[in-house]
Each structure stands twice: as structure tokens, then as C-alpha cells.
Image (cartoon, rainbow, N blue to C red):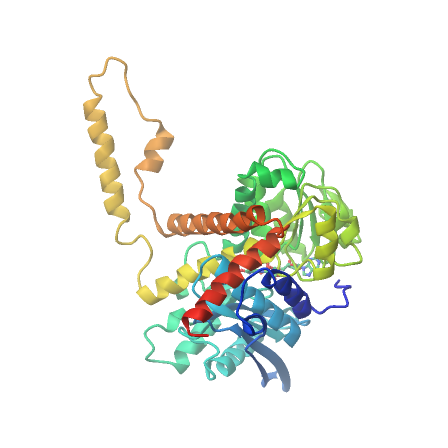
Length: 475
Ligand code: NAD
């Protein structure tokens, strides 16, 4: 894993400083924006199997230039203060880059979720949520968590229920956390949002031939070979959409217990089913199994997508990475030292603060939905359908006597005559967000010769936005 002498937080700070040096900031503001405002450590006991187990959790608030602050809750044994603070900082810059009006935060619980049954995990999650909520570290207008590694819809449902039990008269209680299941106030398209965002990010990159050329690639996404590390929420959905919709080939997949490789392209749903049934990739029949999975990061491919954990591309392997394009679906997969090596080699990196912003973008939509107490599309869907059907019937009437018969294709008729529901609106909003954010990064990348990578460009855009927010507060 991370072989750098720098910690994850230091690594993020090095990347931040590199960009901040290129932004005209008043004295002292660079440091103010860089530091993490606060980190709350909570230790609590839960009665489990006749004994009491003590757990340690964190909630960091990196920047409150906008509130609420936003960021996921991670369940993993490796969770520590440094990691949570690094992730909270990334949230600040991610939200700014995709113009989501939140400050940055992150939480984590030191736990191996695999060691507990559902009932125990619920007890632990509810207690953690209680500890955070009573300090307003879960709150619809102050701090809104979401899923991250090791957590998902289920944990978010427990959290919203726990918050509602403490705040019985809060009409906006459902907005205290995002990533909830639909029946608990969630939004269509949130589960797959981060992976979907990775797909949209890659598609937008390939819409700009000038940028594609910088990665020594040509053409579009179709046919490109992809290696993905991590087949959880983010990695699986990215792999699924890129292979089934964008027509790319997922040739490699790296998981905890090893890797799979198939030059012709893996059957993504089949691999997923195998993992669900067996708990790992080992034993999957239709691909080559590689015991030392991490070695596959160095295999030849067009696009490498680390979608698991931080620090996997570091000084020990950076110079052997052969992919010309790296898309950081995970947070912090490339250390600052490795980033410097890769930049020198000419590798193009689509950075985490942009590439995995799909999750927080759709979380923002969910939060807005919860505050407005109405499903997106509910008011206008049928009205839109009615108008479109009216137009079609009027055109049919006008062309009824045409010499050359005019007929709409079935595909056009079915698409044009149906109004947009919540899922279609969420996808449209996410696609628009990903396109605009990429364009804001690439403008800096191409306009300023001193900016030679997308990460620095992304940080520059974000830092300018955060700084202007501080300025308007009189700082
Ligand atoms: P997840 O828990 O659903 O999946 C993580 C996957 O990575 C698991 O399948 C796990 O087995 C695998 N993994 C863990 N360590 C590994 C290793 N050393 N080598 C290979 N595989 C390994 O988590 P997720 O939600 O998909 O998050 C993955 C990354 O994406 C994290 O960095 C997270 O911060 C980031 N992210 C997640 C979201 C989200 O909405 N879930 C949003 C933004 C960023």
C-alpha cells in the first residue's frame, strides 16, 4: 500500500499547496483554507455477545465556508484521524469543483464490519449516529453524512431513523443524511451515482480530442481497455456502465484476494455474481486468476481506474504504471510523490476531486428533495408527456395527406412522448454537472502554461471558489 513517507493528509496538502501557489490569495488565506477546522473523536461502548466493546469514531469538518458540510462515513479497521481529515479536505474541494453548495466533512469508524452480524451493526451504527447527532455533527443544516467504503443504504437508513428519534419534531429530519434507500427518503440513482459519475467523467474527457491526445490515446471510449481496482459500490457500477453502455472492455479487475484478467473483456455482471456468492474473485472460471492482484495495476491498458482505497499507486510502483490515463474513482489512490513521477512520465490523471464527485452531486439532489418534500418530476412529468403527445398528433394530422408518407420511428415516439421522472432528471443533472466541472478544469489546464495537469487545474478552480466564499464573508 502507501509506501510514501507522507501521510494521506500530508499528500493532499502537498497537492493543495502546489495549486494554491498559483492562486492570488491574501496573506494567510492559503493556510486558513488548507487546515482542517475540527475533528471530533468519539469513543463509545456497545454491549455485544455478553461483553462490552469500545469503538472509536471520527467526524472531521474541514471547511465551513458553506453549510451544511458534507462527506461520507467510512467503516474500516484502518480508519484514523489523519485519513478522515484528508478525506474531509478532499470533500471541500470536490464540492467547490462541482458547484455543490456544501463545506467539506468526513467521518469514519474503526471497525471490521465483516466481524458483526446485521443486528450488531445496527446497534453500533445507531450508537455512533447518536453520539454525532447530539453534537450536531449529523444535522440537516449543519452536517450531512453519506455512504463511503464499508457503508451503504442500510447504514444510512439506520442513521436517519436514529436522528428522527432524537429530533421528533424536525420536519426536515430526512435531510440529515443522504444515500438512504428510496423508502426512507432516498433518491433514484443515488446508489450507482459515483460509478455513473466516473462514466460521465470519462465520456466527457473523450469529447475533447486535444485532451485525449495528451494521454497518447485516440478516438472515443468504445473499445478502450480498462483495469479497475475495487469492485464495491463505485468500482462495480463504473465497470458495469463503461462495459455495457460505453462499449469499453474491462480487461482486469483487482480485488482483495487477487485479480482477474481477460484480454477480450470480463463479463462484469457474472464476476459480480461470483463475488456475491463466494466473497472474492478467486475461483471465477472465465478469466485468468492472478494471486498478486496489485501487480495488475502495472499491466498494459488504456485506462486504469483505482476504485478501492488510498495510496495504492505510490513511489514503489509509480514508474512501472503503464496506463496512459488514470481515473481516480477512489479518494487519494495516487500519493503526492507518485503523482510527481507520473506527471513527469506524461500520464494523464483525472483526479479524485472530480472523478468521484458523482456521489456528492446526487447526494445534493437528495438533500434538496428532502427539504422540498416532493419527488423530482412529480409535478411536471405528465404535463410534459401531454404536450409532447399533442405535438406528435398534430404533426401526424398535418402530414396525413403528404405525398411521401411520414412516420416517426418507434424509438423516437417512445422517448419523445414520455416525460422525465426522477431517475431521468437525476442522470441529466449529474451529466450536466460532470461536463461543466470538467470544462472548468480543462480551461485552466489549457490556458495557463504553469498548470500541467488536471489535478492542479481542479484544485485551482476549487481554491478560487472557496476563497471567494471566504472573501464574501469578510475574510
Ligand atoms: P465499497 O466498500 O463499496 O467497496 C470497496 C471495494 O474495494 C471492496 O470490494 C473491497 O473488497 C475492495 N478493496 C478494498 N481494499 C482493497 C485492496 N487493497 N485491493 C483491492 N481491492 C480492495 O467502497 P466504495 O463506496 O466503492 O468506495 C471505494 C472508494 O471510492 C473509496 O476511496 C471511497 O472513499 C471512494 N468514494 C466512494 C463514494 C460512494 O458514494 N460510495 C463516493 C466518492 C468516493
